[in-house]
Figure 1 (cartoon, rainbow, N blue to C red):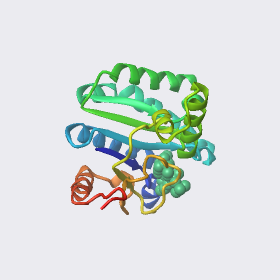
Figure 2: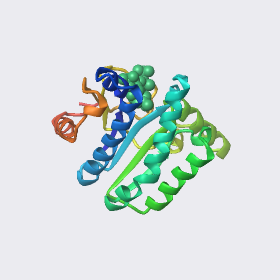
Figure 3: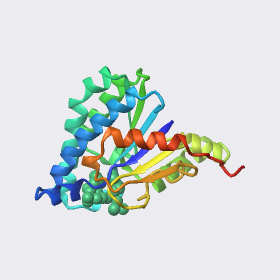
Figure 4: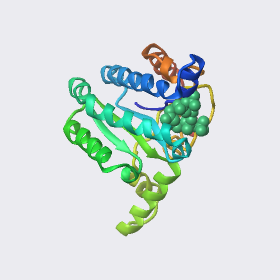
Amino acid sequence: MHVAIIMDGNGRWATKQGKSRVEGHRVGSEVVRELTIFASKESRVKTLTLYAFSTENWKRPKHEVEFLMRLLGNYLDKELDTYLENGVKFRAVGDISKFSSKLQNSIQNLEEKTQHLTSLTQNLALNYGGKDDIVRSVKRVLKSGDEVSEESIEKNLDVSYPIDIFIRTGGDSRVSNFLLWQISYAELFFTNTLFPDFTKEEFLNILNRFETIHRRFGGL
Ligand code: IPE
Ligand code: IPE
Ligand code: MG
């Protein structure tokens, strides 16, 4: 199954403890590592797509954006062994051309060194917007000369497989421009847990609840 998570609530988690918002992002990145390892061992999960930075998140204060970029760079450089040891193939999705060339190199390096791994594919959504994904896909279709169709658009999206389970932490029930096309028949799970407090036990609980759902896809 393909699971997508909007990792929301880092800032509020930190503020609640009298810490600066960015401390929430730091702890959130540790949760990303734990969930990645868990998902690599959970045979039902084949792909895990995580929302780390949206096309709208550039609106945040400069120091927070800069912290997130530094955190991302450190994470990509430090976690190679985690990916190798757990058989996780890393892919960035989103328009990464807006990032510094150093960050783009770190992304490319982790993608190349893990491309042969098969326990789990992890897509990290970076400067990702669902609308932007669709626009870039349609442009690719037109450039290729193919007919515009559901199949050709889907094939050219950054994330070309449908989502089965869509999770948002942090208490809000909105999609915030994540995977708009791909969630057409996803099962949606909203939890009040702030992302730094999200555990593999809660993740497992959602996977088990998903299995009890009868998906009709418009049929009976
Ligand atoms: C999600 O946590 C992480 C990013 C968007 C980078 P937030 O930073 O949105 O945390 P809240 O929602 O303000 O608590
Ligand atoms: C969504 O969270 C983006 C990520 C988790 C990366 P936001 O905090 O940016 O979403 P809004 O602004 O509450 O909709
Ligand atoms: Mg938020």
